Image (cartoon, rainbow, N blue to C red; front, side):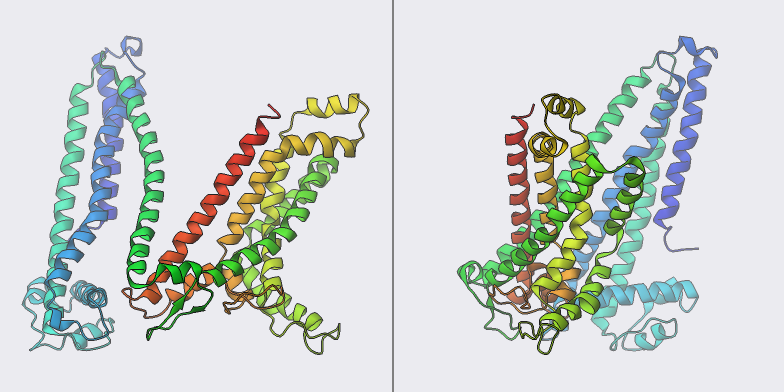
Length: 494
C-alpha cells in the first residue's frame, strides 16, 4: 500500500464524480418534471452542469492551492529546524535543503523497491546505518555521507509531506462530496440552474483573467524584491551610471548595466533594419500584388521561419553565417581587409535575428493591410490614383497603427532573445560602434550570472534580477509607446 495516493488519482476521482453528478443531476431534474422538459425552468443540461461544477470547481481550487502552498510550508518548517552548525562554510541553507530533499526522495524510492519499510525509515539512525550505501543500492547517488541532522530533517520532510498529502486527499474529497450532495439535493424543476451555471462560468472567466494579471504581478514582485536585495549590497549609481561590466565572485565587482544595454539595443536595431523592410515589403506583395495561388503557397512557407527553434538560428549564426562574415571581413578574407577578428559579432547576431523576425513583421502586417476596407482602395482608384499611389497614400497610412504595433512586437522579441545572442554575439561587455565587433547583451549576462554554483546572497548573482527588471521596464516602455502611436493614428482614420 502506498504511503500516500498520487495527485493524479485524486484528479481522476474528482473528474469521475463530476461526470456522474452531471448525469444524475440531469436525470433528477427531468424526474421532478415528470419527464417533460417543458416544465423545467432551465434546459436539462444546466441542471447536470450545476451538479458537475459544484462538485468540481471548489475542490479543484482547494487542490490547486494546497499543491502550491504545502511545499513552501514544509520547506520553511524543515529548513528552520536545521541546526546552523550543519551548514558548512561556503554553503547555504538552500543547498542543505536540496540535500534533505534528495535523501527524502531516496528513502521513498527505497521503500517502494522494498529495501526498507515505513517503520524502518522512521527508526533509521545515521550513526548506525550507512544511509549513502543504502540509497546507492536503489540507484540514488549522494555526493557525501549523510549527517544525522540531515537524515532527521529528511525524515521530518517526508513525514510532513505524507501527512499533508493524506490530509489534502481527505479534505478535497469531502469538499467535492459536499458540493455534489448539496447541488443534487437542490435540483428541482423550479430551480434556476441556468442562472447559477452562468454566474459560475462568469466567475471562471473573471478568475482566468485575474490569474493572468496576478501572474504578471507575481513575476514583477519576485524580481523587484531580489533587485532591492541587490541594491542593498551594490551601489545603484555604479549599476546605472557605470561603464564597466566586470563581475568577480571573489568581490570588488563592477556591475554596470550600460555596456549590456548598449549591446542589447545595438543588436536589436540591426535586427530591425533587416526584418522591417523585408517583412513589410513581403506583406505588401502578398496582400496587394500576389495572386491567390502564390499567396497560398508563399505565406505558409514564409511563416515556417517562425516555427524554427531559436537555438537552430543560434547554431546557424555560430557555424555558418559568422564564419562567412569572417571570411569576408577578416584578416586574409575575400575583401582583403581586417575589420573582423571573431565570427561572433553584432552583425552576426543582428542579421540572423532579423531573419528570425521577418515572419513576425510580415504576417502581422499582411493581416493588418488586408483589414483595410476595400472601399478606401476603390475610392482612390476612382479619383485616378494608380495602384502604387493607392498603397503609399491610402493603404499604408490606414494600416500604420497595426504595422507600428507589429514592428514594436518584433523589437520586444529582439530585446528578449537569448540563444541567438549567446551563440552569435559574443560575451564581451564593452561600448563599441563597430558592427563587426563582439558584444554581449542583458539576456546573455542573466544566463551567465545564474549558471553555476553562485551564492544567491551575493551581488554577482542577484544582479541578474536587476537586469531582468530593467529588461521588463524596457519592453513595457515599448508597449506603451506602441499603444500611444496606435491611438494617435487610429483617430485620424476612424
